[in-house]
Image (tube, rainbow, N blue to C red; front, side):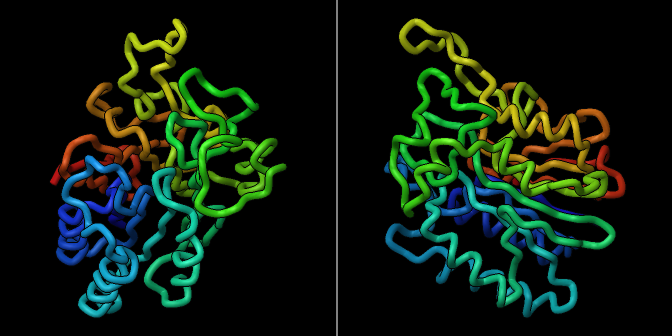
Length: 286
């Protein structure tokens, strides 16, 4: 059973066209989108969907509709989450589209996908960036030097102040997974797990107020969940440079295989995997 995984496309038309072309030709059973799907607001970003356009309505949905018409019964199951660069004000529109059947919105949701299960989670630990829609404290209210607290920054939608101040990724994951057996579950995250080859950032030698920065920026809570609950496969993005720095986009932790589709180049990083043979996953730059 062939599956595709992509992340951090950031609205780049080339990446999406390459992905849709490969879906049409290779006909995977499922496609997983690991967040940061929408055009970046960064003024230096190049190759994005035209500024001011409605990416979801005018590009993403029509492309998937065309694929569904073309593929018919071979149209893949599509699971997606948003990432920390995607404004949460659009979440309701992604949720509404579940009814059309083009995709399943997986943040904080759990789906049966026989003989497997799929669940997703978008939030990342505090970053230096201003948008805080998808940021949570990790396992405590600690914030790394140089990062901005979830209680600061800005949000595209209002949020419960108590949840912002006291909520953690660890608590969210406990509520999401409950007492479920995760041994046949594919977990779709935006953040990578802490201190792995997937969360290595280009922070070598950098300091804030003379304090050295941690070069690992992933989630402790996600790593603990993987170590303790051993899901079948976990999918990650967020840290674009990790694969280039560590020369590794996949890693095994116990019985769990972890893949990253984040990439700092202009190409599409396409991860292919079969849940029945997770060690044999491949990654292609297109």
